[in-house]
Image: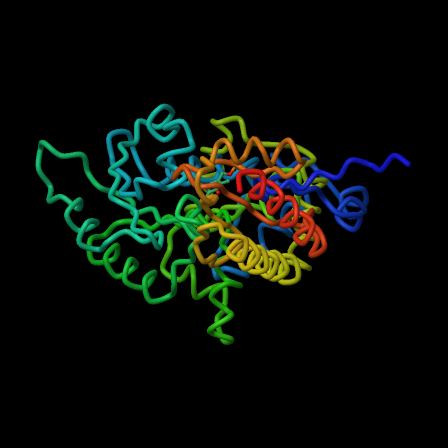
Length: 352
Ligand SMILES: *Cc1c(COP(=O)(O)O)cnc(C)c1O
């Protein structure tokens, strides 16, 4: 008998698809022209995101990249600089959009293994007013940190960054594409944590719904009323003003209703996969959230190992750091993890 081909797709959490409840919510959504501010579903989503993260207002944008771009276009004029991690998504994966489209000058400082930026490195880039220097305007941090393996920045660290930005009259942007992953990861050791604790003092936060939260597209940026008013103009100029987009926002609202269930389940699966890979001889970084980075046993090279896995329908990617990256997601079941570990074990055996 022929069995349907099972593909274990752990390349990213962006491969997730909307579930039946989300599709139903999209179908039923009440919509209007959002450029006139008349889409009730979009308005509800923006308000809800602002509330969750303790901000005055929110703005729905097409993607995480657009959320970062629009936020930084709003904070900076041409020639002003953003202090950010050298391994941040904005610095590595967004085509230099802030420079290409906004004339904004990136000032990268080294990301540490845990996704943080050293405060001494940040301070060394906050240059005093001088005719030779670009004016620093924003500090941008990323939570969880993608390239650093989904590490969550904790509340004490964020507070320290807020202190620095306030002392130096800068703005703070948080690329929180996976901020819900950060929240539920940190909540494991601090039951009283509130999402607002991760964003207090920030001037803008970018939240993605198209990663682990299974939406087809969409991010929301949140900040003050005046920030969002100005961001609205910048969203328009990059072509991001949309019309009856409540059909999409409805999926995000539905995702928020089950965010805890989705994210904590992804984190549990990631821990399970971590243990399994270690047991079969891989060198695996202990995960914090849903991103797993590992090196296969010798003599396999990461790229070669990814090809061998692909031939057996297990999809991973080679990460920026040349480790293999797996992101368990809603399309991955607990049973899938047992099965794919078995497949990986077989691959390792071929070289024994
Ligand atoms: C994916 C991601 C983005 C960008 O999101 P897109 O929707 O792919 O444009 C921004 N920041 C981080 C940290 C991400 O992981």
